[in-house]
Amino acid sequence: MQAIYQDMWQQATAAIDHGKYQTDALINNPTDDRRGVTVLSYLQASQPLVNEINGFLQGVSELEPQQYRQPVADLHVTVLSIISCISGLQLRNLNVAAYCEVFQRVLAEVDSFDIAFRGITASPSCILLQGFVVDERQLSALRERLRQAYRDSGLPCSIDSRYKIATAHATLVRFNAPLQQPQRLLDYLAQYRDYDFGRHAVTQLSLVFNNWYQQQQHTRLLDTVQLR
Image 1 (cartoon, helix red, strand yellow):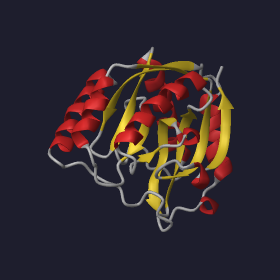
Image 2 (cartoon, rainbow, N blue to C red):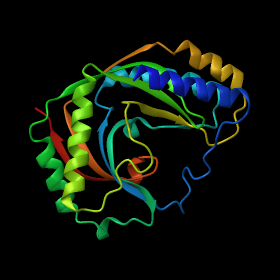
Image 3 (cartoon, rainbow, N blue to C red):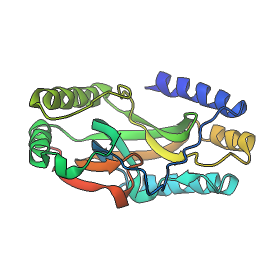
Image 4 (tube, helix red, strand yellow):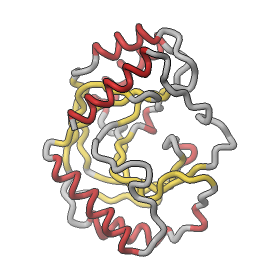
């Protein structure tokens, strides 16, 4: 995972340096009807971790107050997007019980695991928290089991349609306005490149119907499973 995060950092810093970063005009746009189905772990129960994240975000807000901060309730790690967000998807058109049955069946024998959050990386449009699973094979195996089970189920899904997820990151900030102090922002982020934010125990996973930004006001919890 470290190599992926490092490559992301290099590409993002170059984009910001050259004014090639991307802003998102659809955040909080009421006409945005992109919806999807996702397996994820919410971070808000890990209070020491959240406190560290909030401290970092306060510094970002002082430099770039117009940028969109993920609210604490929205902070999460995506395990797998079952249906990547598409325009017009409606919950009433999905067989929710069948999606939940697959979810429960796959997770019935999955052990809990920890994610250590160390360092900040970025993309041309976001600031991200770097997550590391002690045994990467455990998360990879879980994702593969979910992929296979949903594909075999015959249920509508679009797994890996955007990209094949391979990290355990959490999105903290989305650029939704021109950066006012890009160099100072990069300098600030560099201070946190290897910062130890803390750990998150993944003891349960949620299946949700969500919008692009995983905002709670546009999210429906479909199911939750406690891990062993």
